[in-house]
Amino acid sequence: MTPITEVAGRRLSLSNLEKVLYPATGFTKGEVLHYYATVADVLLPHLRDRPVSFLRYPDGPDGQVFFTKNVPAGTPGWVRTAEVPRTEGPARMVLVQDLPSLMWAANLVTEFHTPQWTIGTPGVADRIVFDLDPGAPATVVECCEVALWLRERLGADGIEAYAKPSGSKGLHLLASVTPTPSDQVSDYAKELAVEAEKALPRLVVHRMTKSLRPGKVFVDWSQNAARKTTATPYTLRARAEPTVSAPVTWDEVEECRRPAELVFRAPDVTARVTELGDLMAPLLDPARARSLP
Image 1 (cartoon, rainbow, N blue to C red):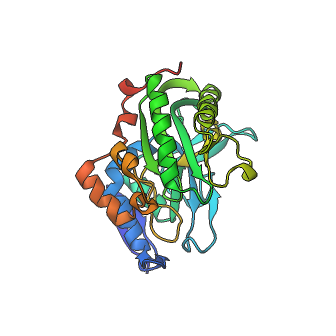
Image 2 (cartoon, rainbow, N blue to C red; image 1 turned 135 degrees about the horizontal axis):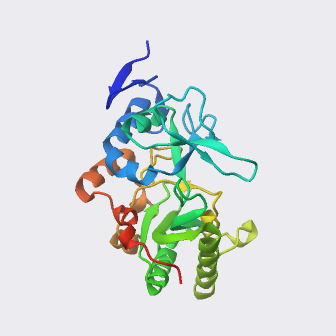
Image 3 (spheres, rainbow, N blue to C red; image 1 turned 120 degrees about the vertical axis):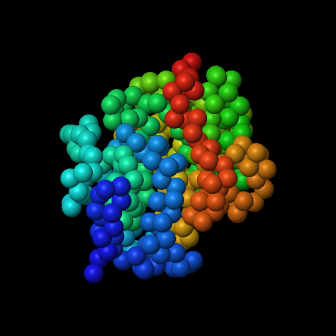
């Protein structure tokens, strides 16, 4: 019998709580739900008003993994949805606005991916993102070196950046910007990626071409496009272990010498949130946003 749980006045059916989703560690679906309930206060502000693309892995990362962008069948009527413009025509997507919606979505077993704009102004970004993706044998250690260069370069334009491991191999940099059309943000991000390649030719490539990437860090500026999404801060990832895309301090970035130093699993993150709060909270403050040059 599927347990019925009440969350903030909403009744939820939570299924298969004993199912092991991460065989490498024995981490269960019940523990996934507990993780999301524990970090809800820091995760929800980063989800709010942003249409969510779900990267689902209901049988764990070794099973089928697939994106769901449209509102899933069976979505409760109290989960907020919104019409989102797309090149192929408008579609309805989910907005995860509150704890019951978060727990309903977590029960689907999913990563959370969001765009750099909010539903009130589609295609007008309030964030800029750089996805630093290492090509073997490069690792997140090399990503940190590139991130420090980008932090300084953004700072020269008055823009304050924040970092988080992707929860996979790389590193994400995010910063708050005053509302700006996504194509303009993409152009600016590309300019900085090209500058980074010129400044750090041994380390950086700004093009996706696979033959250019071994041993280098691909500075993916293209995720600023209005149609693209990035793993939301605090989302679990569909990896062998329950790793999280968790914000880090710049001291941690500067001091990283081994990839393992920036690997955070769900239990690590709940402890970090208790100790540090939300290291990306400044992204949520409109007063901290800066105009692009």
